[in-house]
Image 1 (cartoon, rainbow, N blue to C red):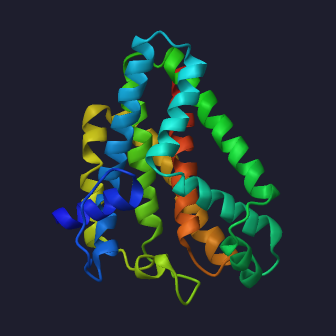
Image 2: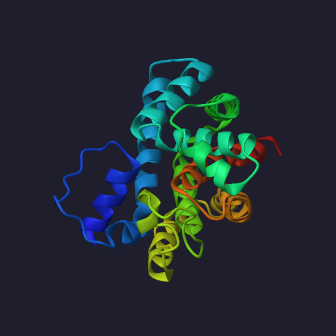
Image 3: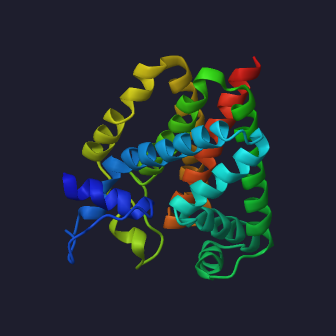
Length: 250
């Protein structure tokens, strides 16, 4: 169990985790249960950075930009790259085969750039609003959205097919089972215990992109790829923060 937790952390962050030279064949699949754990680490890092920025007296907008940069650094921009590739594929291809080929291309096209700009801008605006008005719930929200989004990514990898014959996602997508989902769900319980109503709302909002992409990717691509999972994570995170902003205004 400790090894699979390390795999999840190494896969989703840049944190220095020592792994054996040869990983178990089912190691990546089993690590899905610990995706929310990686979310706790990422959210905790962002909450700590936010505290430092507030202690330093930085304006909310400046702090928000720095938080988005910190989050991208901690995750290697992996999921942002996945979102850009997915948008390029969906926007530039007319068949599943053509869309997959576009997504495989390392170049980022217009659809990917526009999507990244909009996503990052929305993250900055949401975080700036939370920093200015979040009050006692600020650190809870900073933690909750990354945790919930990574849980959504794990659920998306369950019960679907991988549309390519080879690829990193081949050993993972469609192979996540009930045991991994149950473990991931258990790691969500501190959110509900901390603040059950806000936790459920943020969790529900963060799950929406995963639910949408389950059907959209199956129809447009013939299945779910690693890029789709990354897009689900980024969209889920920003939806969680957006839901928190809406809660503050009602």
